[in-house]
Image 1 (cartoon, rainbow, N blue to C red):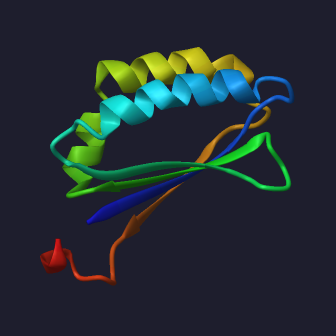
Image 2 (cartoon, rainbow, N blue to C red; image 1 turned 120 degrees about the horizontal axis):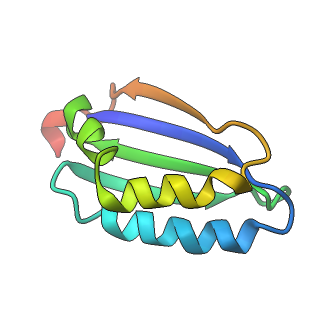
Length: 101
């Protein structure tokens, strides 16, 4: 599996806009055949901070995700709401083993 963790900080007052836009990206992403998980989390003590936890079968599935209409629409829509550049860290899965999925 290929895991992407994205830290996002949005401008105060834009939290609900970000949530609404990200819901559309989430709904489209979980329909992709190579996407196993797409979780959207909001920090408990800092509501303008979000964490996206994305799991794909392969790095190529993630690349395909980045070409989808729902991702490209989301990326453009949220760009002006960023308080800072979003940071995505890419990981390879260790446990549980890929064969378990």
